[in-house]
Length: 262
Image 1 (cartoon, one colour):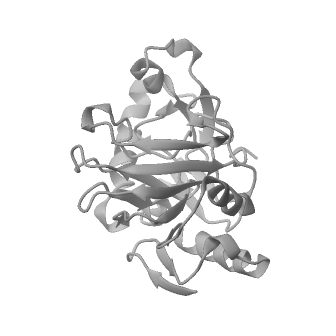
Image 2: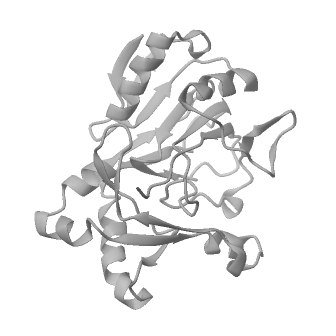
């Protein structure tokens, strides 16, 4: 396989590899690259849902989706363009951080993609943490934050009081590389644990803006046959909806992660 950088802040493109036929040594090499680059792109794949699932299982157990999974493949959700107003992913976030054990990784496979637009943007949270001053790091290193799905509950007309909530470190230690990363996003992070919302606001607003600076970002432009995986322990992502009503069909699955609290 041939490896080339996707962008300066993060990401790598893995060419000349059929993910349906990788060996154990191939997987070990890929996981090392994954921990190094945080986003891996595998172009020109031809995957049935079973192939997609089999490749992802090298990294662990798949997340079970109680609603919306494909028939016969409940671990896969189909993302289909239903117009900008119906797109709920137009925000920077890490997937399902309102769970005590958020998914380790997300893996998407494109069946159809627009010729222009529809990119996915990523922001490297290890870099975002590294660029903070030592004094600010000392301030936030031992803080925890409350993450909530209340916004999603409102969006879908459900009871906010029943929404999932979880407590996570504001600075997360990667369980494989031991690297530190910011772990907060405007979509799900409500407040600092033990602080009021008003007290939390200024600090969190700074982190939300800081964590998505341009110099931490990379973007992937989708082509049919692309398989893309990203590390939810290391990056934020954003689905850019600038492709109008053009067809975009992507299958998504996720791998079970671990609790962020030691």
